[in-house]
Figure 1 (cartoon, rainbow, N blue to C red):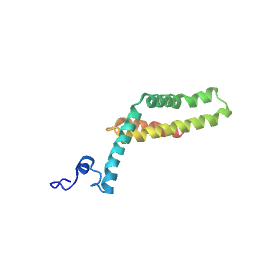
Figure 2: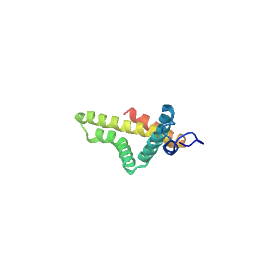
Figure 3: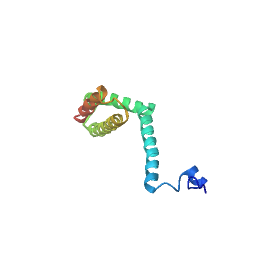
Figure 4: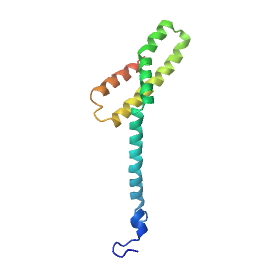
Length: 122
């Protein structure tokens, strides 16, 4: 026991027994929030996510026209399901970019929102 500080060495070193439940939750939440923020930032910048959105963009540009040119009535539901999946990918990318990229709401936000909305009507 340290008479000057009023707590033991263990308390000073680990600061466990002196923290309230609310403080413990707040401190652990900050770490978790930073980990989630860092992880989602890494996801947005990862080559796999960039490749997926690139392929989704190529699909969005050409799939409907290719289906009209060489597809049949039987391929329409498949194209619709894939288009819905691509739409969901674009919405997730839009939300993540809006939340985690500073300055995104300028030019690229409006470009992405128009592209995502136009895909909804196909």
